[in-house]
Image: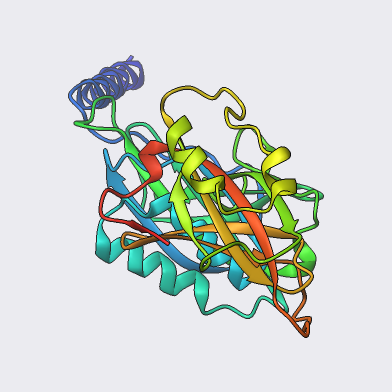
Length: 289
């Protein structure tokens, strides 16, 4: 009988402890971290930010060159200046001859974390997993996370699937979509130019000095993506270029040709590049060109 009484007392105490924990969670206290699900990948963590209500874009992408690194900065050009510069420093100084850089920007609701690791969820499947987590029932604003890893290029195949619970194809390295890229048969009248061409009159002003063959293949309306999108056009020079990437910073909107592999031509070749971008990614302080 005495042992039974002790068991009852212990049981009551256990119930009170559990009830106390439940009250703490309802009041906003931390709950135990979620179990890890992937195998840790040997990777260098370049940067990890976690902010409440930072409004970061949802992003999962792979950087394979310094050009990619410069273009990816456009996702964060409207962010705080010091954090934007930290991101640039982290991704621009890497050895892209032997490694790739993975960028993950994601929300975690009311879950905070002390760190993050890169995990494998199967062959060619990589994603971030928060460590040292605390999940709160209520929070003033959801947490936004930015995790940047450098990893051996061999571990990141071209068809790599990125993400956490939902794996998918990598996002573009830049928020700007290339709508048109083509070689001009001759140098445009005047110097290389850049302009916004979101409106029909802006588009007409831009194409006037272009060779006739370029004008004939352009669609002044382009794809219908809604009023939130803006379009920018550039004439760039290079040699045997295959594409172009829009560079976005707090100070400037520009375009760089890519794909020429360092080829040299006796005379520079000129290309037309037109991009479309969601207006929320265009800094109000940036000049065009």
